Image 1 (cartoon, rainbow, N blue to C red):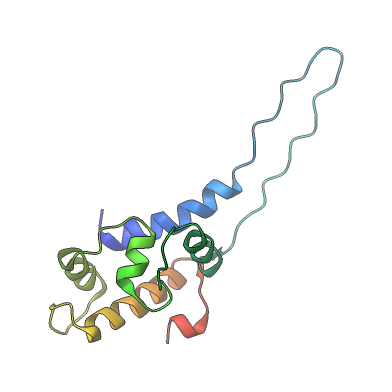
Image 2: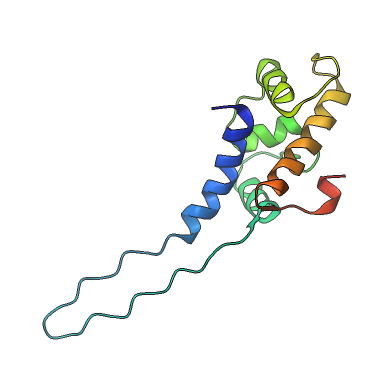
Length: 128
């Protein structure tokens, strides 16, 4: 599994877990079974809402809106240079893989664009 897949699964998995209905109580002979809720299709995952909720519970200030390192920390993914290099290669970065500000800014924007391309609802200011 690649680094982007880990990021996507960490975010989209939160939405899937929140969308799972609670198990229904079994019917008793005295009471008829309750009608089962109809699942609602989720067209988009609200990436910003999920990350903001995670950040509120992080226990430390993380600037996930602009920092790829903080975004990875928030999702419990090792933000080491080796992992960022691997992510950069996965996403097609053509610059030097040295952990520069240029590389990190590019990575953050590319991750947000990929999340949007994979069904995530991402504000435009995070993908530009």
